[in-house]
Every structure is written in structure tokens, then in C-alpha cells.
Image (cartoon, rainbow, N blue to C red; front, side):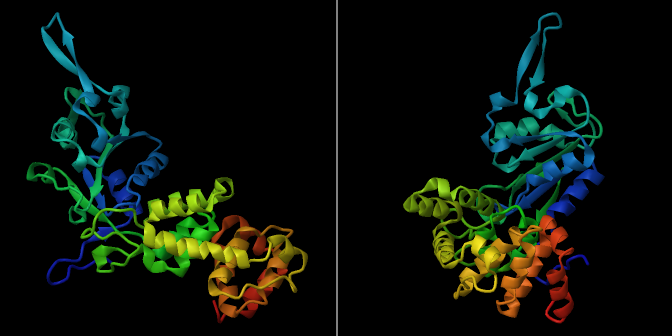
Length: 357
């Protein structure tokens, strides 16, 4: 159901990343300005559109373009005129429909924005003297004007675009996407602290998330959690606890970094997975909630045909809510799900615990 404005019109009307991609794909003669707070993943729309349409695509980093980077005027001595040859990054030289993401358009210099502005026209869109091929998809991205990072646009631009605001995915939506992609410890931490992905636009501000009223620093977002996951996958190679601590605080900000670092320490309570497989009824059980959460997320990712029986037997010793969490995470992991649904102990658990699910 469409969102309704409240009486004072302060609640933003939002859509999802998938919804924005559908709009851009369906209406190639409309120019959309896709806005969100930092780290939501606006540029992922480009890759979703490339996959959906089969068109070639390009991301133009407007914030880091100088006017000289956009192209070069070429002199025609015979006609005594000049023509403008665009930088190949725009892919207009291909003379076929393309997808162009003018990323961080509002942060571009005035000269760069003026040069790109004719691409926003509905009739005869062009880059200098180069026409944009029919069927091309061009969209802009930027942060919210309320983010306080300089993303305001003039009326002459606003009259040529449709602004849409992307809803920041909450923890539940993010965890669904993150299954089998993001490091299990990162997923477990987000599940334990779901408010880390709250948004100031809905009135929920905490020490983990973006607050435009405070000095800029890294905070928890979909993007920074991906970076944190990359660090976690290489933790053994870092081999320096101080460096590891500095890296995670740098990735997601100090408050979240301190919380996550303490959470990672729960790993010390965990039994080796091999001991669970070897003796599921006697392997060590962790005692803290944080350690159990880490264990449950980790086991869901390690289910194979050979380990599924042992995992289910070990899980039977946990409290029922942890058993539920394990089986939900197994169901979200395509590889583990296919194995589990063929596993007798797993199906017996499902049949016996429908009330819990």
C-alpha cells in the first residue's frame, strides 16, 4: 500500500532499490534522481539494470570529475568550427543504448553539472553535440538534502528530474540479503543489535548510525558492513590484534567497532566445529548469549551432507529459540537449505516444532 503523508508532511515518501530500478527501466525518457542517506547502495541499481536489460553500463563519478575530464573540443579547420568529443567513460561513442549512472551528481562542480545537464532533457538529450541514443537509461544519485553533505540542486535541474528517496533497509531486510554473502560473525552481530541499521529519517538515532547533526565519521551502513565482512574474512592473515581493532573501528565507527570487537571475542568460548561433528552430544556448549549467536550463524554456513546430522544433534541441546534461529538461517542459505530439506533429523525437527516457527 502506498505510503500516506502525515499532517505536517515530514515523513519522506520512499521506495526500495528494486523499486527504483523498475522505474528507471520502465520509463527511459524520465530522468530520476535517486537519493538516500550514505551507504544504502544506490549505485547497485546500475548493475541490477545492466543484468535486467543486457545493456552496457557505466558509472560516472561526478564528485571527482574536473571539467577537463568530461571531454575535449576538436577543431575542424575546414568548417572553422569545433566539436566536443566526450570521454569514453560516458560510452556515448558506442552510438547504441547504454545505461549511465551520474553518481553523486549534486557534488559535482558547477562546470561539470552544467556540461552534463543537457543529458537530462526529455527531448533531444545530448552531451554537448553528441546525442544520447534512444533507449538509453540515464539516472542520477545523491544523498538526501537533509544529510548535510551539500546535495542541494537548483530549480532548473529539479524541473527536469523526478526525485525518489530510497528507504534504508532495516536489519531484517539486510540479513535476508546478506545470507551466504557476509561473514557469519557480522550477520550475527547485526542480528543481536538490529537497531544498528536504524535511520535518522524515521526519528531513530543511536550511536551506531548516521546523524547529520554530528561531525562526519564512519557509521554502520550496508556498505560499511560489507567492508567489515571483508576484514573478517582476512582476520587470520592480519595477525595483529591492535591493527584488527583499529580496522573495524575505522570501518563502522568507534561505538560499533568496540561493540563488534567485544562480540568477536565470544569466539574464544566456541568449540571447534570438528568436535561438534565428531561428538555432537558431548561437544562443549557456550554459555553466553553472544557466543551462542555466533555459533548458530557459523553452523548454518557449515552444513554439508556429511555434517547435517551432527549439527542437528548438537542443536537439540540448545534452547528452543536458538534452534529456531539456526533453522531459519539454514533456510536462508540456498546450499545448506537444499541439503537440510533432504535430511531426516532436520525434517523431524520441522515437523515437531511448527508451533515455534
